[in-house]
Image 1 (cartoon, rainbow, N blue to C red):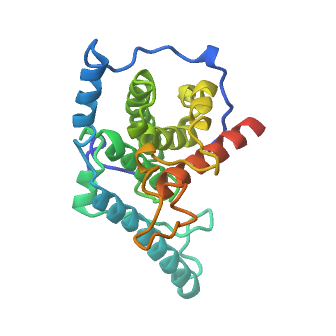
Image 2: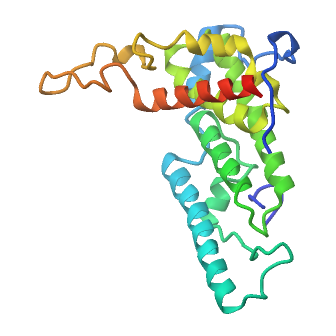
Length: 249
């Protein structure tokens, strides 16, 4: 597999004051913010992996890990001296051609396609496959977060439109989790303050366009969906928990 296009095979960070952020110009495509937003709306649908590909490729990683654990256990029982010098049986990643292509770093991705690709590399980096270069995976995570940072700064330049808030929180969570030291922009307290301002009275996150759709077909209010967007609230809760942990470190 080509190092530049195929996936091969510690977290320690601190919140960084806003004044220490490396200043970058937002990746705008025009001086007209409205035109820039229109361009971004078109761009974020481009690239891969698709949602289905992302789910299938993550499943491949987990199946590989599960099979390796089973094989390691079986090997330890039948051949107790076949393990590595560290006492752990070697594990190899067998990735389908479709997933190798979908997760290629050469293929440009945007929006959720980009964050889903990063999630794949985060999971890949924690599996410990013998044929996966950890340096390659770490570099891939950094490169993806650099691209994500350009999008996050663009969303911030748009003043955090409601449509992009779920994506913005997903961008912050994944990159603050994996790259907080290398890219401290993702731990900017000003961005956290913006996120906190999106919580409603129930402590949830929800798209403003959904506020009028709080009743089920029977006319009864659903206690969860009435005030919460499931995905948006889940991502928001994960992000706030991560920021709290970073503050305590």
